[in-house]
Image (cartoon, rainbow, N blue to C red; front, top):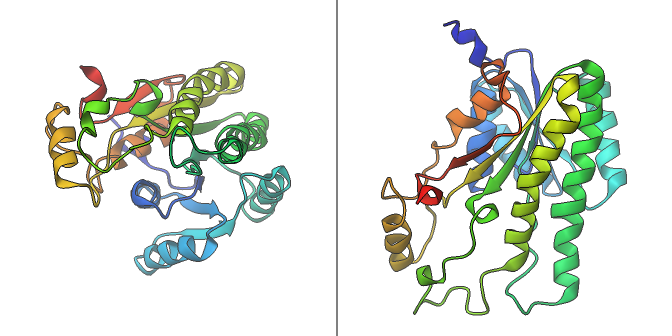
Amino acid sequence: MNMDLFSLKGKVALITGGAGLYGRQLVRALAMAGARVIMASRGVEKNDSVAAKLRAEGYDVVAKFLDLGEEESILALRDEIYREYGRVDVLVNNSVARTMKGYHDTKEAWEASMRVNATGLFLITRAFGDKMCEAGSGSIINIGSYMGILGPDYTLYEGLDMNVDGVIPDYFYNKGGMTNYTRYIASNYGKHNVRCNVIELGGLDSEWNEEFRRRYSARTMLGRPANDTDIMGTIIFLASDASAYITGAVIPVDGGYSAK
């Protein structure tokens, strides 16, 4: 097999966000595979700090401003990228706004979430997806969650000072919508050789309560949460020509959490 199929050399990849726990390894993976990577969010300073470290290692990574809650910002970013690079081969929808604190949070907190996580996802996918269709190729990768395919498991939190007002509902709503929107986009753009797939991520080990970590790990077939390299291979595969015949796929990368 020609391993060049996994190379992203010559490709331009746009990822929304990229400075978070998951985002950093997604950006690094794309860059390591040879892509020119553009990180875009409102937090340009935070993103540029990540990008600068990768540039110091010899990778081609830059940060640009994007407000996913404003269509004008999305279209301005699209036009800027196409002026500078002439193409976008990979779009990674990674950003998520965490505006709600619990089930009884305000209507305004819910609507702020929808503006970015639902409307923003739709608008950026359309803006860049349509351009990919004009070019006749492209890969759109949505970063979902096992929470988009499963309901909440409250036994994880019993007796802990976590989710005392219920597991945050907008995240389940948005990630569930992202999952089926992936299928929609795959169908809508397939005739133009533009693919769309979703990765349903499991929990990434961070500053978790030790009891929560124990409970979560016990429910995961591999017996642990994700680490800071576990997603890299999947993102490279889906971004590259190695996955040229895969579209509309819902791919759990969760250590077996959702396979029970």
